[in-house]
Amino acid sequence: MTQPPFRRIATRGALAAAGAAVAGLGVVSFGLALAAEPAAPVSAIASRVETAADHVRLAIDLTGAVKPTAHVVANPARVIVDLPEVAFRIDSRNSRAPAGSKLLKSYRYGQFAPGRSRVVIDLAAPARILRAETEPARDGARLVIELAPTSEAHFNAAAAESAAELARSEPAPAAPAQPAPASDKPVVVIDPGHGGVDMGATGKHGEQEKAIVFEFARALVAKVEAGGRLKAVLTRSEDVFLPLNERVRIAHQNNAALFLSIHADTLAEGHVEGATVYTGSTKASDAEAARIAEKENLADAAAGLDSREDVERVGDILFGLAQRETRAFSAQFSQALIARWKEAGSLNKNPARSAGFVVLKSYDVPSVLLELGYLSSEKDLARLTSPEWRDRAAGKTAEAIEAFFAARLREARAPAAPPRPQ
Image (cartoon, rainbow, N blue to C red; front, side, top):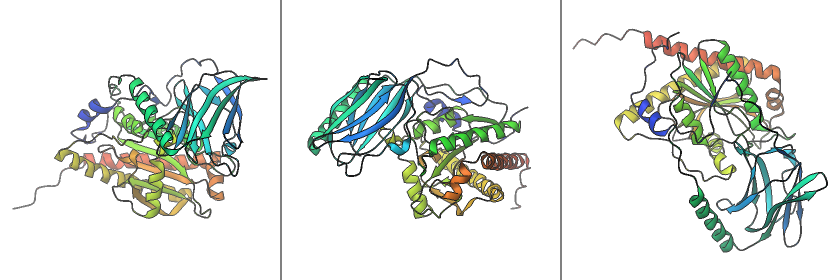
């Protein structure tokens, strides 16, 4: 089957060649054969926070010893503990400090990159690292991170020294990845938000956004591929952290004709429910859209990275023309998606919104972010964790994708309007 005659944006190739590096994280197309499974990593099976008058201690029980490295970062104040790959089997509801803790607010953990895991500790006050090491335990080993109070000046100096040391030790940039081979079908890149150490939102029973959206994305890929007219690519095929701009680069590398990012948020108001569809915009459509975008754009910081916005730009008139055309196509897909989700019966009262999401800033790939619902809503949570609902909603989303490409194909084949008489 030959690729439909969609118009290509003139500067697509130049941008893809200049900025398609994927930093070794890789892209997995649905249906790609998996490599042989590596040996099982060490598992983390329990954690606890112990407070004392002069220090706080985070202990994580492991099935084997690992070698940690730890440093502090500022703005916001955090402790980063890097590890070889660890399989975390800890209930995320236990990842907050005891009431009254004056030094440690919360912590999170997960895979940071292939073969690497990370623990991120959010600080309530400046702290210094007394020790970060594993020690023998009865059934394996124990990772111990001990922190003590310090002055803000000493903390900032330590953070600056850590940042300089990390910059010196960073490996040389990898050569830009080559664009994926051209497909004979339009490519849809489906982006399950968050992942790894970046857990996203959490439900009151411990449900994690990163897992819910990943299962939905896998179901959606299966529906899209089953139609036989499109190729679907996941930005991540496992529970691993992926920087925001890397997700955009994956779309460029695969010559995507559509990018769909999947999320599920929480709100203080438990009665708010339903799906919301966002398009990119420099100005948010409303205060709630601005809040959601600000929260999602902090995903890199949640994993302990500096959040640098470096989505590629082209400074000429073609860039402006392409961006306007791309936004028009994004709005067109948003309308198709909302129309199909009305049939799923779980739309927010204000379903069409826009804001400045980093993952929606590609100038030449129509991009939309779908918030499936709110983990803070009992009704939404029941839907989001239901395999039957997931199958039905993924089917409606796939129908919207098919409708979008069918409309593009009709537009591409339509005869040009005759010139107006002078």
